[in-house]
Amino acid sequence: MPAKILFLLLALTLSGCASLPPSSSTATAGAAARSTALANRNAEAAQQHLAAVAAQRAEAGQQFCPNWQQALDHARSNAIGCAQMPANEQATCWQAVSQWAQEESRYFHALAPLLQGGAYASPAAQAAHFFDLTQDWAITCQNGQKACTAASGHQQMDHSKNAVNQFCRR
Image (cartoon, rainbow, N blue to C red; front, side, top):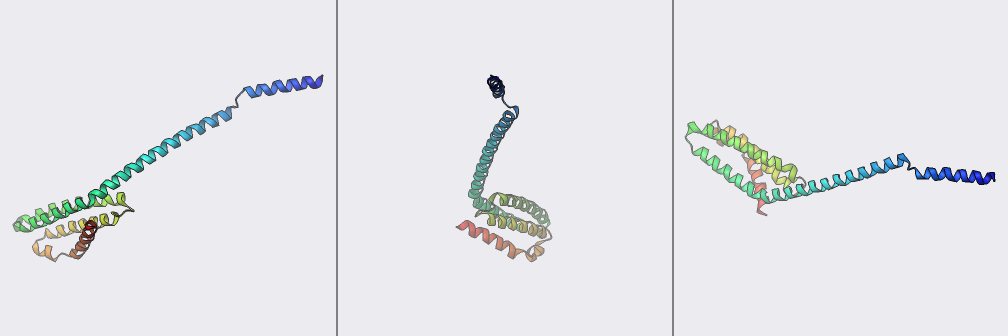
């Protein structure tokens, strides 16, 4: 009999334990579920971000050559316009061209990280370099026609321009 009583007491004790959920397991399971949900949301947000960047990259790639050509045409017309102005008005004109070239340079520099690793990365860097040099050249041209024609950097400007033009002709 004492064995029966001991067995009965042991069975009652164990059944009581089984009916109480262990608090640490429940908390751990809840934390794991929250972590999983957060990880899933973060993964979805990352996928959406990557899709948005891919769309921006594709749009920037499609617009690169037309934007380059438009900027290059504008640079030519600006230079011709300043050169044809009366000498006493040229400095102001060249200053405006320099500021405009700086903005174009910023635009093409901003494209570089977006286009990094793709076919447009090098042409974007060349376009930015071209407008960096154009800005410097326009500043030199503020000192008059002789300074403008004697300015260094024409070969570098031509090299950058030709590299971008060659890429855009493909």
